Length: 463
Image (cartoon, rainbow, N blue to C red; front, side, top):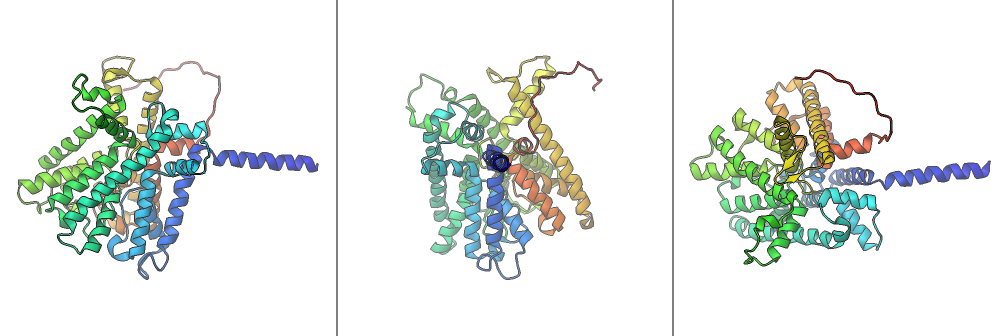
């Protein structure tokens, strides 16, 4: 009897250990733990102003920082102390690089080996090719590239900001905004976000550059670095062909969305505060860049025409690229989904992207991702319409806030600070799902069932 009990205890302990080492559990649990720690720290007296931040607001801020969203229910500049702002920027950097990245760093520092399953999750998160052989080198490159890009951004921002700020404030502001921009977080130390700096084109273009690099994905950055290290005068091969299919898709789709979004915003209009074509061009381009999950705003979002708000909703839903600091359904997913639609309309069984045929499993996974994302946002809009019915706001504002949270963007029409506790909790869950990805959450929550049983075919009418 005694040995039976001991054996049962050992089996239970083994099951628990096995569960906690599942990559999806590590990822979800790691983010949740970091968010909770951040919320506790932000409620301490030395992190926030007395009576300004309750636990729900601290939890919202911590989730927004770790999930690199940028939505705020309290003012980062005035309601948090210097220590609180330092905590927020640390949370942003941690969430931007990802818990699994830091877990991998810990494994390397301790001299431990990661399981093949954990390496596979990191493969899906950061890389595409020969991951197991290149992990250690590529991981170091990720850290070096991140520090180099953010550091260069800090130097440029210090140069521009020091013209209107004292050196100490300019340095901290540059560090905060450089990390926030590269991690696509959208947090700002300014009360008006970046509206007051919209005429400082130097700051605008530095922030845009950081956002774009942060949203391309570490794999693409690694490939760009590899290509640039080659012989730039070697014209024997088309430079574009040196990139993988993934990188080519990401670069093309990102360019189309950035410039296409800017053109559409100029067509449908910005606010009445933009005077002259130079302001309209720069701020239209800036909002097109930042709408794809960064969340900075150089115009008053609440004053934008409804058509322009809807354009931003589309950009926020798409988001950045896989393996980046950005959220959304990702640029490559949209490219695959569009390619699938084209193949279906042409009656083709194979889905082609560029000069390559895509695996059926990849196309099916993309369908599942798009379906889950659409379902979550429809449910979120219905929930917010119910919980915030007392606010009597326009439905488009509700849709905007929901998609902004899901895409981890952080843009707001001004509704978020006025949300009810239930509405804040829902957006907390939405930011969490948006950062980790609906597929990761689904695979973590829904047990995997393998069976060899196949049911007879059936048909139903469609269309």
